[in-house]
Length: 159
Ligand code: FES
Image 1 (cartoon, helix red, strand yellow):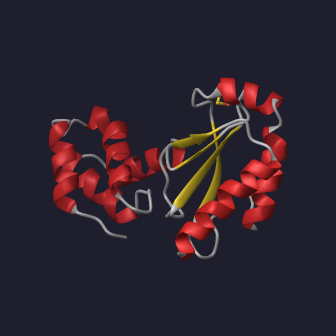
Image 2 (tube, helix red, strand yellow):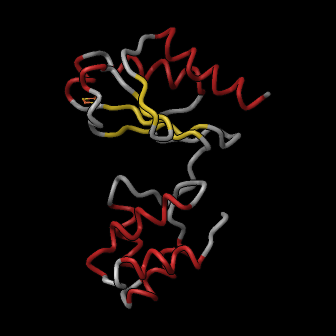
Image 3 (cartoon, protein in one colour):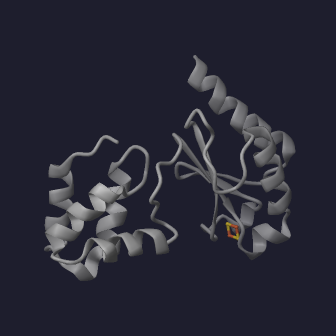
């Protein structure tokens, strides 16, 4: 994991080393890290600098769904499973994605290219069912569109 501790120091400083800001601090740090997760090593570093226990920081990382304790694939595919998307066949999209990626929801492909996970509504209900890949939203999905998106990313990686 590439991790720049001086950038982490700056984030902690931005929040005045306030333990009450633990979640935004961890979110900011996670965004810095290419594999989008907070390792045990980083959790300990944050704990030391906020003067709180490492186990508390790690508990927050494992409990809070927007934080990850395991490395993610290069493309984090988030499938909305909130009400509107569920009504508009997000379950079907899950099956298609699992099939094309060869993994189950919550898993990462062995080449570390894709991680598939559920997320709550991200405000794209008007174009549901929707997914978000590294913050880019794709909506009005159907089988062909999902396959086209994934194949497009694979092609891009192979160029
Ligand atoms: S319910 Fe899926 S984006 Fe809102």
